[in-house]
Image 1 (cartoon, rainbow, N blue to C red):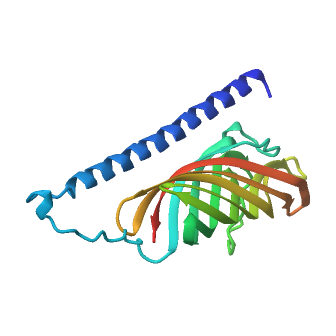
Image 2: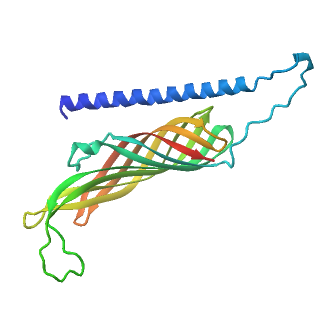
Image 3: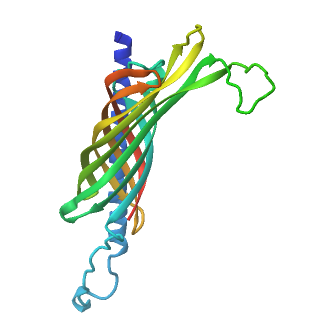
Length: 255
């Protein structure tokens, strides 16, 4: 890796660390502002204090059933060599996120977190393939391809929440596929898909901002790691492949 590439990666990581810190700070200020306005709106106005009767303080609503479901999306930055990537564009892309779980006492929760990172970019022009049932005998026309790279993790996670902040971590499954450019027997360009499944883990945290009694906005960050062997139709491509990607995103939690 050249010095210029290292500098670019340092600048990118620094930018997104500042972005994540800014989102968390903005969320905290938002929560404090909302709670301050709510406290002012509920300040009693009326007769002197000595004539005001005591009012029982009702407990905060639980927000529905203890099971929660979170849908989210965000940005993912790969932090692994990606030995079979054919383009530097394979390092950054969008992510999708899904969480489901249950909250217990003392802020403890147990759930399943799933995350997918995917990137695609134009591939080589390859020989066309005749359509099924085509009896015209026409020669297929070569056409462009799209190279896809997908990574994923699904982990059983343990979480702990204090006020609006939470941390979580756990382990489970990981998977990935990578379209690889190659050369056929006659020297023509071909594209093969290598894929694999293995073990992985994830850890991270975030901030929860209530929007309604059963709906919350979530700002989160996760670091996902997976290890597996890559196989293509031709056989083993690589063993012990490791993917790592940082995920910064937001979502809605329904309880």
